[in-house]
Amino acid sequence: MPGNSVVIQEIEVAEVAARLQSGQRTVLVDVRDPDEHESGCLAGALLLPRALVARSIETLVPDKDTPVVAYCAVGIRSAMTAMTLMAMGYTQVWSMRGGFDEWQRSGHAWVVPSPDGEAAPLGTEQATRYARHLRLPEIGMAGQAKLLAARVLCIGAGGLGSPTSLYLAAAGIGTLGIVDDDRVELGNLQRQIVHTTASIGMPKVDSAAGMLSALNPDVRVTRIRTRLTAENALAILADYDVIIDGSDNFATRYLVNDAALRLGKPVIHAAIQGFEGQLTVFAAAGAPCYRCVFPDPPPAEFAPSCREAGVLGVLPGVLGVLQATEAIKLILGIGDNLVGRLLSYDALSMRFTELGLRRDPECPACGSGSGKK
Image 1 (tube, rainbow, N blue to C red):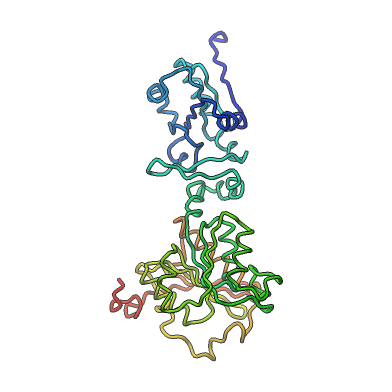
Image 2 (cartoon, rainbow, N blue to C red):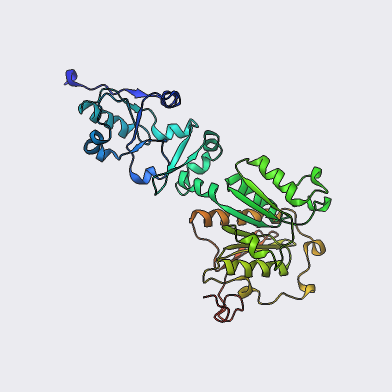
């Protein structure tokens, strides 16, 4: 009947933000489902799926004159919730127009609920910076919080380390360690894009840190200006979740492999030469390791350095971006990574080839006689 119709009051997200900022008494009720809550919510909101509102709201909000703002994803479920609350006698009830989606689009801050009931905040600028990540169901607020908490170590700030570190910084990796003892040279700039002409003569870790911090001030860059050695490898790698191997020599690759195995750290390995590159992930958990694939280094004449043989300038960009992709996937636990697979790239033919890798049971680093199972 028209005389019994209920008028639902809607409130704009800007007004909700203003109420919260000014400290006006307001109870927020998030009526989305639990799996939606995991992607983020407004700070302090009651996480109460719509089906539970009528049963629980009087216990949680006994004073029916309390101002209540209900919200859902886009504003439909919250409007129905507002009708329920008014029918129960609540006198100041609003449905937030556009819901949590509009709150996100407007750049307001929100938080990620955690299992212990605490929440990891994401500021307004961060919400804008990572907005395209937040729209991906595979990442969302919870995933971005994982990226911001992650620690990734880049071995080398050269051809591979440059694109890898840039994209990891842009993605919001919270801590990036950079290991390199070289200085920037003019001949580096054809491919090492984390450096500029003004950086010539600077230590690479300082040049890289300046560029990465300028790109994303959220990122904490740890400068490790040294050469990785048997004496320091374990101590350096121990503090990181994922290791990016961008080294350009076999000795360092074996060293990184052995230290990572001992520590149980995954290594994302890439190598480049001429017009070709290769990429794989050594997971350090019962999967093939670097020594399984390359038991012994090849003779020097079959493995010249980039300085000796040359390299296409854009080639490390392709492989470095793929390294960053694998790192993000490992941190988030999404997708299929390259463990047990070697991806080979030929720039001249523009062709990717995939090869299966098998663990060597006699491998001196991870085989049955090594102490690693």
